[in-house]
Length: 415
Ligand SMILES: [Zn+2]
Ligand SMILES: [Zn+2]
Image (cartoon, rainbow, N blue to C red; front, side, top):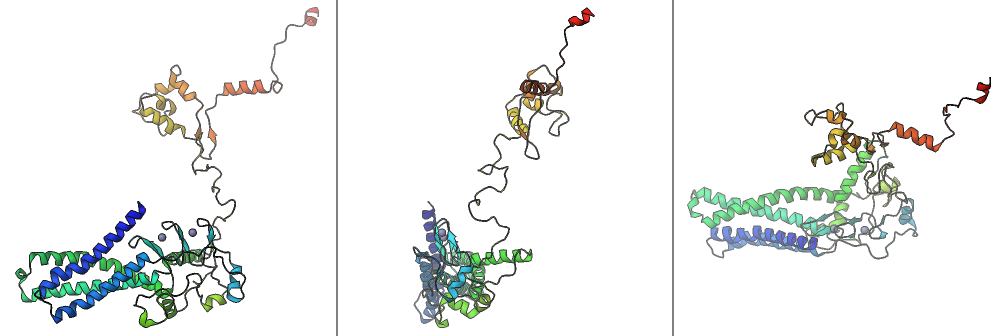
């Protein structure tokens, strides 16, 4: 079902792009230019179609390119000299779901059910993860959506300005008018939403961080602010130009051209500053010192008063709720359970005599050994002191001196 829904979203996205890209040309621009193939029309539409073509190509690459899986049997290199040795100072990252080591910057995606190299986020619009190998296509796709949508809006505005200039709205056919409105209504929200998203991703591109690492940076900043850890520099920021090169390729002239991602997604250069400060690829993200340690006790609940399903002891259910529930079924228990001085007692709920009466069965109900959880988590039972005393006497007959009336002694009668 999830896979079908994912493909449905991709189909919807393709339909939306096609609608915006082609209805404007067929129903708005074509009639505007007099339904004739002129040089002016080609000059207007060829660049637009080139943008749409490259946008679709990048979109298909986002959907189809594997974002990057961890190679089978991959393990962090702790034997080589130099840079890699520094990794020894950190703890190797391990994915318990995949039962394999995690390269730096990779994360486990529960939708894809695998670890993804340099994972950014799982994107429903492409039904795929955005990872090391399709991130360049993703950034280019956002860039071309911004360009194509802007071009589209400018064409529509020009069309409307032309009609307004002539002052003759009646010359615009009803189909044309409807498609002008529909194109505005679909294109402008897309431009605003994708535009905002692109600004964030262009910022990420320049700071060489992923969406997940952006969240990690926020968390680290909070820990530093609270004085829990020392300030840690993000180690992958290697200068703006190098950051962009590490994603879009070394040649700036080809940044907009759909070319594959550089690198293998398993190792990443870290900044000299970070190396000098003793940072390694495994020292990011720094851990919260107060966090529960991983290990044999990691799965235990934090509180000894909880059971394995994180619930309370099923025997320690508050009595009143139990009794109130049965009260709704017409029984007299509630009145019996809540005495008149109790905060839950309500005046209208029957007479107080029902509680006070000792002869009827409600008294029996109240004396029933019910369990309830006190504020400290103890079991609190109503105490029957007579029964308790009897139990002690039965258990330890020698503990108490009983007064047994002595029979009149013979010596007394003798005396
Ligand atoms: Zn995993
Ligand atoms: Zn995913």
